[in-house]
Length: 292
Image 1 (cartoon, rainbow, N blue to C red):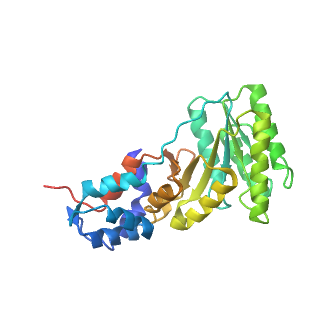
Image 2 (cartoon, helix red, strand yellow):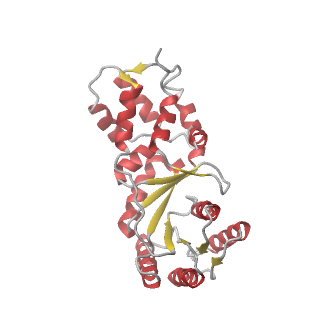
Image 3 (cartoon, rainbow, N blue to C red):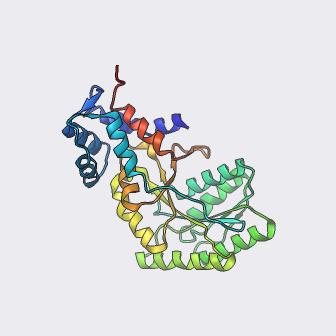
């Protein structure tokens, strides 16, 4: 796991060389400010971090404790539920929803669980086709209809099928964009209501997929989805393809939501549980040298 996290931060580490050409034991506040901004930590959060540091020289241990504190409010506890466990996957088009769903499904299947998918993004025909292809590749059943059909009906049929056939996990895709934000909000709320009708308490977890290459610009997007439907956790995709790894601190701090996984590649197995300690340590490895 540590290797995957380190790989996902490789571009961020490379970018930091422009402000940290040589790693050191300690840095001044101004140097740390430049480092964090280069990693795409939001300016306001950088100011909060530095305001709480009183030492003139900042060591690895000092910065580590402050970075971990920005992730302190992101713990996740799985709710109590009666199987199947229903997850609703939301996010804008292009964030990597479909690929992430396949990764989640593969993970559950490898754990010995019976998984079924619901192709609830009926706004785009390509979304239905792509998810169906992944389902075939993973040998996992899928409930799908045609473009333009009622997405909440797909959600209901998927849950109903899962209950009758004894499935453990239900993963339902949703549209990333409708004609207006109001339409998208109404659609998501309707799907959530229908899920609860199909299976009391569902969806048990609503996950927002965020494109890691967007950096801090994803915060406003995440807040909008959270206001629409209520988000339980986040998955960051494409982290291995961006130098904006520090934006995770800003996203987690601003939203007070847990980061559940990070995407570290295109294959189904490239979904790594987020570990804040490993994430922080990998970033610090690019900045600090070991003390003698």
